[in-house]
Amino acid sequence: MSTITELQLLTVLAQEMNMRKAAERLFVTQPALSQRLQTIEKEWGAKLFIRSQRGLSLTAAGELVTKFAAETIEKEEEVREAMFALEEEVHGTLKIAVASIVGQNWLPSVLKRFVAKYPQAKVSLVTGWSSEILKSIYDDNIHIGIIRGSSDWKGAKMYLFDDPLYLVDTEISSLDQLLQTDRPFIQFKSDSNYYEEIQVWWHRQFQTPPKKTIVVDQIETCKQLSFNGIGYSILPSIAIKDADQNLFKIPLYNENKEPIKRETWLIGYEASFQLKQVQAFLEIVNEYISDQPFNHSLLKEK
Image (cartoon, helix red, strand yellow):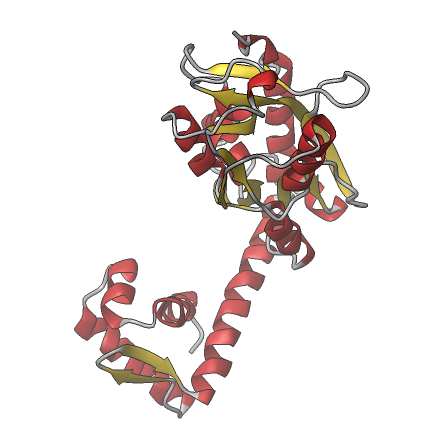
């Protein structure tokens, strides 16, 4: 086995663990895929997959070979990126991971510019929590990450923007109403310090917990529940910039009467920042920030 197509075949089979799904991804028929697999197993002199009604299972030999296949494909991609870095035109794959809220509300406009200017470049994008993004960087699975909250990252980093926090609701129009209302406080609990910041603010402001709470693990769920009148929540302005004008938005302040804000950072290793596709993306980010700075003035509380 020497061709990259066979490596890809094994990798896809190991990912899907299902002949039909793997065949669909590889754009081949199941009989053709089965025949190719038999040929590969003959070359290796070992059974790599065991079929059953529930799908495929890897043998011990299969685990070794599919790991080799995945590592070889990854290594080839690294070599290609290094080769493309020697050329003037931007090629290669930009591997980026971003906090979900940034991926939903800020990144699309930036990526639109990037793919329009550099059509030869590819983009691999994943979204998730900031801790997941940091792990992906530590494991060297991505080139750059965009995370929320203050960053103590020691590598290369770039400050993007911050956005203030607002208490939003369809009925509550002032903080004074919070101690009397029976409406639930809808809270977004993540792995970042966002939840903790809100708890600190609340107890400093009121000294007593809210009467009712609903805790969710997705900020978009929190947003939609509030927008539909289920209860009130505290959200960053990036999440509510296109909110209905009938929604009340009350800014939050710290003990120094300063707006409480969430920071957004772009981080990565210095080596990744030397890749042409990463440098090109950073240029687009800088252009976007200069042309369309994050506009907090759109959020005017009622």
